[in-house]
Image 1 (cartoon, rainbow, N blue to C red):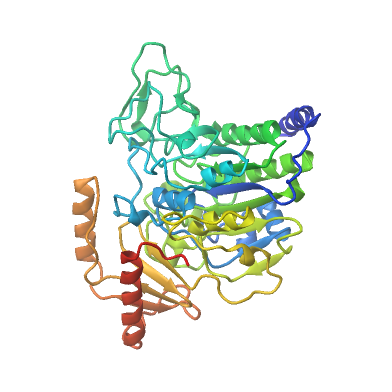
Image 2 (tube, one colour):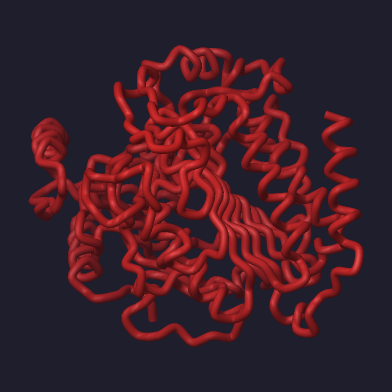
Length: 490
């Protein structure tokens, strides 16, 4: 690890020679968003986990602000990633089934839709997406030709550069993609994926990537790209595959009391540490807004021996919150959210402002002084004041619409949360089996709406719907209005 750090320092020193900074850097900060995968609210030292070693993320919290009421708009992967990119709830798109996109889905974001990347690119930023994508590639449903150019893709919606995975490591293809090309293709050979899950294989490539080296490779791409592109303001969207299954930490990370799961969290932290070290080496930290968060809550899958070992050893991936990934409970939606921006965000501070990951687009528009056009960022609120206020002011966002991986809707309004059970809306999906599965789950779920007072009951143990029927009715009506309205932002 010391040798690797020395090599990174030498590379950064070479790139920094002769690289000036543009005149407007002080008003246009660099922006780095780290969207980790399945890192739960209770999985970091700064969020109260005593045995997980996250010194770099803890440093980020000490030097910035930690949010306790930050929400992913979905408890599943692709819907949250869509919301982050577009500032729009996923269920407003052509599907509202709440689940991840298939691994061979077409690009789910319209190429003329405003995204974080296109907003910042139009303001002179250099933009890169590195890591897990899982928002679709190409234009045909279920017919991705991996041997051809993968367009439209990230570079069609505002990114100058892309390096990473099409979806999860096991989905395939089992080779990295750079810009529009699958790397390592055998000339003249078709590329095909066979099998499923741990048994999936990709033919037509030289060799598959090594799963336990993915984090190392994508982190190196981030630090190298920053070193090559920091002369102008830049935006990096970094989406680690950790700690999603397969739980495959690099062999350099061992010894966690929570086994490989804990080791994988340690690797996420080390990855962030390398990015922070890059900013320090290039004297960019003071001009860079860094955000760390997660796409949904931690996976509490007891069908996985690795997850079960971690939890049996005492890890609570989501702290004392109920549920986790895919669930409608707080553990599925509430995520770690840490912001550092020296001189702007108060150090070592904590905020209880409610925010959604959909709010990033409007916040970045405010930072760059760009008015949002009509028909864009429909569910994105400007949260800049929540980042920078020295004393917490009035709520900037009073409610958030949430959708679980089983398509169940909920709404958080102030300190209250309603889970919609009775007469849920119809499902739009491209997968008939998915609709059938949702219908079966709904039939076996509670049939009456559930109401929780989160200020006193963050673990959602007590349904108080019968005690406050009028509030439950008002919140259900508010949820229906938000779904039928064209937008929720002011």
